[in-house]
Length: 413
Image 1 (spheres, rainbow, N blue to C red):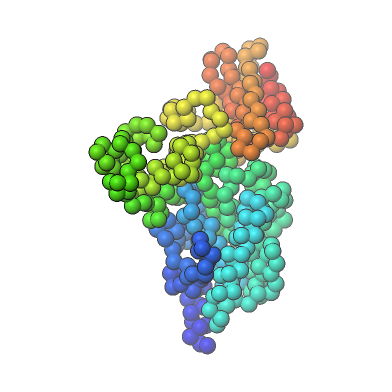
Image 2 (image 1 turned 135 degrees about the vertical axis):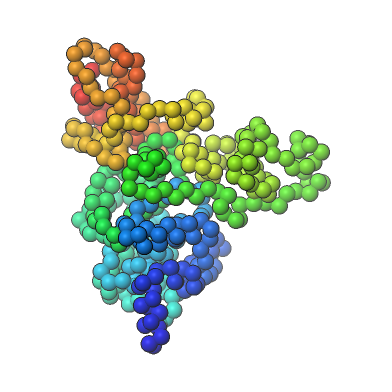
């Protein structure tokens, strides 16, 4: 028994021990219980968190990623260890939908139930939303469908899972982020696949990339997953003569994009490229942009697919890099501009008086159907012939109308 107490003390000092020693169990894709073993992508996150903690810094991470890297599983495991083995730690895990929250809760419960009996933390109570421990720590798992979010609580750790797909992100973040103190020993992690250009997660990632906020960026490309490769077909199974006498070769143009550039930039094998082709053809019906969003190779690809664009998104993305940074970023609260590190309103040029009808406010609604594009308001300076501001996000009709009216008043148009 003394030996297990020593192990428990070591876990309190080093939460990596259960991750690397196989103490935790998870369900694999076949639904079988297996020991948790961190993969390449998960190790990147583990090392970054450990580094920040040893530098006595609060952990603030934003993780844009390709699908199936196991990021939610890893962070759930880390937060379970930190909460279950340390006194008075409160943790919030927020998922996109209620069913996603239930899946995450099941992961945490399996970790609790399957850990070694002599190390198992004592639970005070648990239900579909909360796992409470006798050490006065608790893990709350909620969905972003709740407008209240984490307001009214104090947390040390928060994970926002698949945040790019929340429908009321600004409102949730306004209250929930205030529940975590900006001190060492706390953790806030945003993780998600992409969901088009613009929006809260997009802004957060881009600002982290440019070192304009407190978040460290960890991008996880699809080719970091060791499973994402396929054996090349034999000559008699090759279905196309375009491969130059039945030999697989990377293409420089066509339905798969510039494969030669991909192979050189990311040092990809033919087996990885063949897997990529298979996914584009069979899982995405030839839609290259949607593959890029779900399985990005770099940060720009993570947000490349959005709505039903008329213009080439790849080219527009290149042009965006030439644009100047916004002077102010935030949102409108109570009909007034409110500064925020991330926000749906970007101000490039503030209002200048002395001219009549100088500014035009142009509105474009995105719609309400699943997968709809963003609604956009553009403030155009007719004197200097440049964009003075942009509001960009998913809004209800009345909210969008109020935003447009408020911007008209701000720029006297």
